[in-house]
Amino acid sequence: MYRTELGQLAGQRFAKGHATGNDFVLVADPEAKLELSPEQVAAVCHRRFGIGADGLIRAVPTSLVPGYEEQFLDNPKAYWFMDYRNNDGSIAEMCGNGVRAFAHYLIAEGLISLQVGQSFQIGSRAGVKEITRLADGYAVNLGPWGLIFEQEATERSIDSMVKPRGWEQALPALSITMGNPHTVVALPDAQMLEELDLFQAPEVSPVPVNGTNVEFVVPSEPLIEEDGVAQVQMRVYERGVGETLSCGTGACAAAAAVRYWARSTALINQWAVTVPGGVVGVEFRSNEAGGEDTILSGPADLVARGVIGTE
Image (cartoon, rainbow, N blue to C red):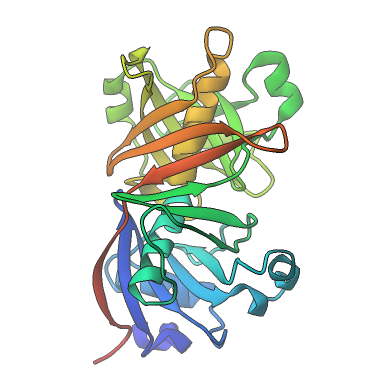
């Protein structure tokens, strides 16, 4: 049954990679011949019957992705498109950890050449993203963040309520867009964060149009360390996946939410977000348009290679 569900993915060369524990199956499709169904992706990503991953990333030329031809014409440097699918096969707009794994994969496959300090662009469903190679990983400019329910957030600093599994009372939250949707909840201490039951999706009201990832965050005390970097801990339930060891855009959303709540005391631009899979950096940086971009940084690794569905 498993081989039947694989369809075109059977016999496809792949690499397995991760970025702070957020893991992916990566495949190259330079001629855009793969037509992936949700069932095929879910079969490959299954933790028991497949390779196992939080998602699948297909490297395909931006010019050959239906609906994104204009993106390439406007940004001809963004040759490769990150076609990201969640563990359940559903399409996601963006994945910050996935971008770093994607960049590492492109370099390892010889699809691009990139030295430390150099940058390149990729296409995605959340727009063109710029990636810089660091000595110990990659930094991704994810662009500006925003408030999903802007009027409510502006009036009350919260706009949603989230009820974790097993809780009788819902908690106030703030919904943030990083090109994909997030709803961030602040908890008072690390023990409460550790004891959260995230085997099922928390109840969110109202739910953003395309669903939402849910981040639970605990700010450090004091929030800002001597080096000027704010410290927070986070766990996440990802839309279409479940709890993951890390979520790059979720880390950015968590930092953005805590920063928004703390804006009356300080505008903090440097953040370290601790997730179960490690630590990622988040920076808020002014851009030429008068707004600010969100920069996510952290490591990425490839751990295996193979062929899907061989005997």
